[in-house]
Image 1 (tube, rainbow, N blue to C red):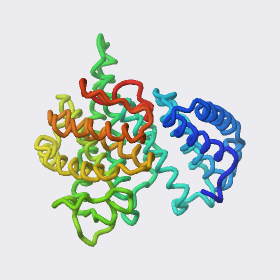
Image 2: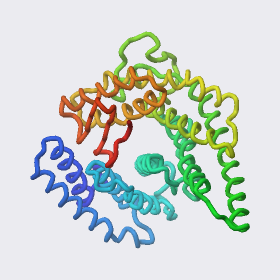
Image 3: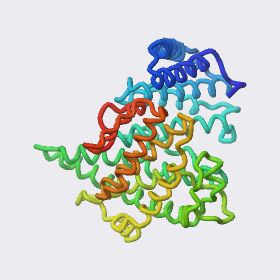
Image 4: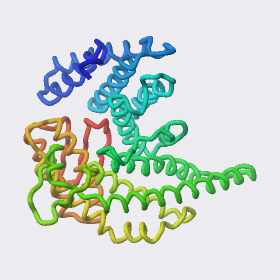
Length: 374
């Protein structure tokens, strides 16, 4: 990004850094600097002429997308945007990619890397809030984010699969809440239910295909270490084969999230039963258990002196906590509590609250005002 940085992006980076360090060190001066830089950056971004230009340059678009990404992280970290209003910024930024421009193509690695990061942030909010996600709809759903030749292929394909689940669940919740319907309302609900059935079948089929691909892929210990996650050397800790580095711990985390989505869809008696392959996967949990243990082994050695790596590890820990607590596995759930306590004791976390008495964890740095898991 050094060739694309402008004053707005630099100021937003200062807001992120000052806010992060200010919260960690409990320094009100840095916190004030962060707020001031954030307000100025947001004001400049909203009044930028990039939004009205017919043909903004690739440099302008990349700088704008990067600024949106950084400001979204500031909002999540500060907890000032728990309602997910930053998704409006993400939507506006991605609208720039819809404009025809000779230099904005699928081969522009920086542009699409930024677009992928923004998509992940938006998906996180949609899944957490059980809200529909605009990128599950046309024209964004037609964009190809997953290519077999790219190292994050399985991760992006997992998001492709899971991205429609919050939308299905939001509409399903609305149908469940329907009452005192007229005949026209009933017909409309039946049409909606039929459409959701089709979408749920499609999700199940896509997830089944993705699971088969993940089982064919293998995770090399050198890849884990290269991404900041070291192997513990335990038997079965990772698979060693000469296969492309498609996996990373985030793929495991998304797999577990997909499992929750399938479980939620299956309990609705008007939604389709999952294929036998997925039904067995969900009920026996053997595959998910294996992936959960892989996350655990990776996270165990990921708690380095880097606060930013610790924040990444926190997301995985919360996923594990939610999974094991839901299964009634108190031993592994308690391990997650201990990890969080260790992160907090090292001063690596930003506003992480741990209360073992109530088995409650809260992550305010992710914009959470309510406990993330109980």
